[in-house]
Image (tube, rainbow, N blue to C red; front, top):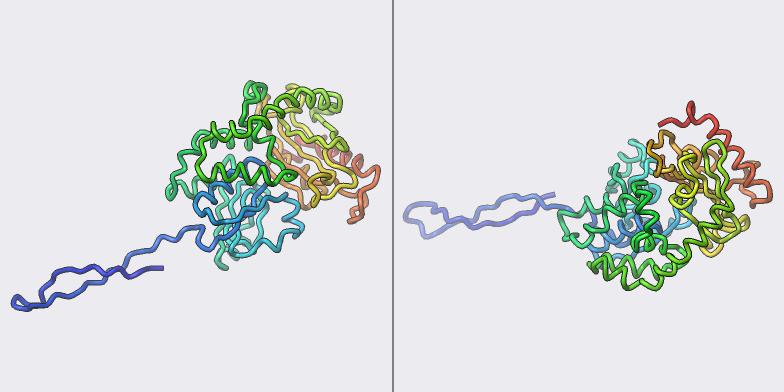
Length: 359
């Protein structure tokens, strides 16, 4: 697309002519990837929130919605998705206008991407440590994002398993802020997102949530006790069953307590009668994390576990998740025994990890 820029140039038609003429030149118009984007749908963790904050910094009038990956894959939020929607840190949807992510299992196929772009969509999938980094790189030349320079490396590290054991044990305020984000408290998420989007300095953001963050810090000791009581290591996989407790934990806590004997961990959470639509009583699910505190890097693709039984599962090779599925393969409600069946299937695949799960 081009625009006509009219530039007057004195150019006599003849030496004695009193007239000059106007010269027309063509100059390209730079199209912003956010042209037409009116809303953002993003994952509800720190990475998704920061990606949304970067986009909103460019267009303050945009509305932001946070969602769970399974909700998107099941079509539960299709009413929010059209060519005016940007999707961040979530599975690909062909009806959106801008797709921004870094998860391998979410990446559209080459054929899907061609069709998407032919219909006017913009695909910004990048092999970055976080979706927030992909958003930052997309807009850093258009915006002053200097206020995010301090937190971006931490977001990258948290989402890609780059946190050291010392950093985790220290449990700094940004680590606690990441744990404070939840679909069960959407107002808090909107406040934090808007603070980052409008350029509030990081120290002021953390200070404004000090009471909440201090509480999370004091609770971690209690959580550690529960995790230790409910964790067993089987064939190098630390299995932590938090189902029915209402408690969630990322892999950092489980693997820090399990030690180097655990190559990875499986965290089961939620309720047997829960649903993905109810953040106060979520569906029974599992998350898989590599033990990033070991000296050796993880050679196994854990996303194969997440997608083994649940077609809506997925994530990274080092961090991913899924929902527990009925043992008979139907869509019925979960019953006693389904969790054990899923565990058996995951452990069967894990047992053959050297031949079936190597990256």
